[in-house]
Image (cartoon, rainbow, N blue to C red):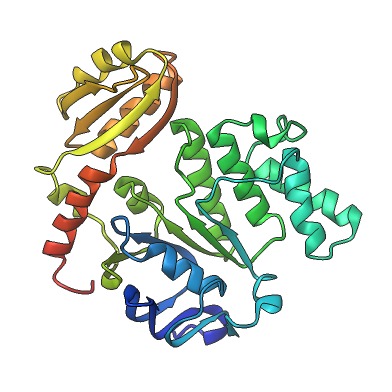
Amino acid sequence: MAIPHDQLIIFDNVSKFYGEILGVNRVNLQIAPGITSLVGPNGAGKSTLMNLMTGLLRPTRGKVSLLGIPTDQPDKLFRKVGYCTQFDSFPRGLTGREFVASFLLVHGYEPKRVDELTQLALERVNLVEAADRKVAAYSKGMRQRIRLAQAIAHEPLVLILDEPLNGLDPMVRAETIALFRKLAAEGLHLIISSHILHEVDMMSDRVVLLNNGYIVAEGNIHGVRDEMEEHPMQILIRCDQPAKVAAYVFARDHVVEVRLHDDRRGLFVKTRDADGFYLMLNRAIADGEFNVESVAPVDDDLSAVYQYLIGTSGGSA
């Protein structure tokens, strides 16, 4: 059964150039409700695609509409859209609660409703206890979550999230993915960019793979990681006991290399099994083996992974 256009995000032969530099080219795409992940190396066009969806950029050619609304109508558009960018900056002096509430006030909500929606958003991202502290004192993961709270506070129908899992520790990462699934089950569109392939596969209904401004594949990427067994992924773990963590993870068969970071407050791990590695790490943290501040892939190795994907995709899936 065909989905009506007023329930789709539609790119109709869209190109965006920055002068002579290509952002995206000849994009024809229809995004249905659920979780759609945008995947690709740095500079592939993921952020350009997101900014086109929100109307922050205008296409050089073609048309973009979101749930039937042309993206050149920002007053209508931003009542439907929540956008969480990668930019980690905040107005000075605000608490987390004030940061979320300020956005709702701009939308014109009454003060009582502002309080209700702010509290609900804080509960959904598990930041109620820290809500009345200054955002400037938050950790990176908490800042990421307060920005997500602001993006969902006005109950949008479309949620656009640029690398929303960056900087989160494994436990909070799992909670956030569960929240994304819940929002999708409620009928929302979630468009998420991510570098972490096992999480993309785990949470996404659909994946759009970009490279050099072009869509090179779209669909379900189930099984892709199994084909990448000979292409180890490198992961950076930030922690206060890197030597202890190194000894623990190096005992696993799928870990092929462990190297301390130069500042000795983290380590690089290469693994052939990203799924197994992240699950093992989550269990170790839950069992109290050690504390971990953050886990993130390393771009240089992931660029090689994406080149592998692009070389074997064989066109649109």
